[in-house]
Length: 245
View 1 (tube, rainbow, N blue to C red):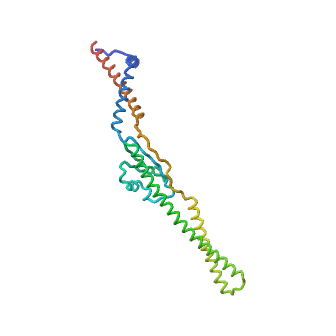
View 2: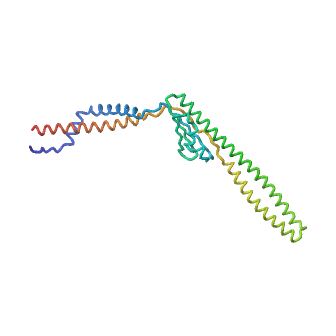
View 3: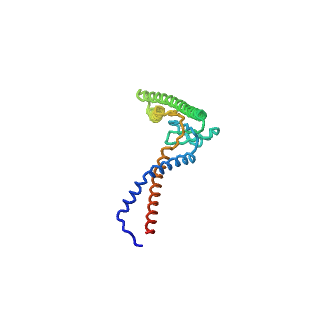
């Protein structure tokens, strides 16, 4: 047996594929259907997914922002998942087969969690405001001292020893006043730019099925299997023809 020279092997394969082009329809369709069915069986989960995004604002307390701590407060909600996608944001996810149950559980978690955030936020604002008022009172008292000591020095009625003592008191009061004023301005700025927590979104929808992705995988797999099958078929036919000659 001598090897037959075949300069147009690629053409022969392409022609063979074209004559059996219906395989490129049947096999991919079959793999698409099988892939979708298998994918849904393997990825089968709850039918509905409820998601909510909560903005935590200026709250940075770990007890209120750590996902594990949040989940631990709702042991009755079985399919609860809490993540922090980025700083100041908490994403709450609840899954289930009944849309109303998912909606009810999501509202429960979001409502209690947001109320706790708001309660902590208001307490923080109240404490800071109370502290600010105390500092403002201190600022007014120091300003009165500075004004009084300045008047005494400018009156000309003080002897050298008294003038020295009053001058020291004036410097001390001015330094204290400057420090208190800086703290007052800083706290006022914190209150102005303080970000309160809020619920940004809350919705329940059908869970993602990944049908499109599964169909794409099935199509690629089907085309690959078709090419392999037809190439193997052509190779076997050529081999039989060669050995029978």
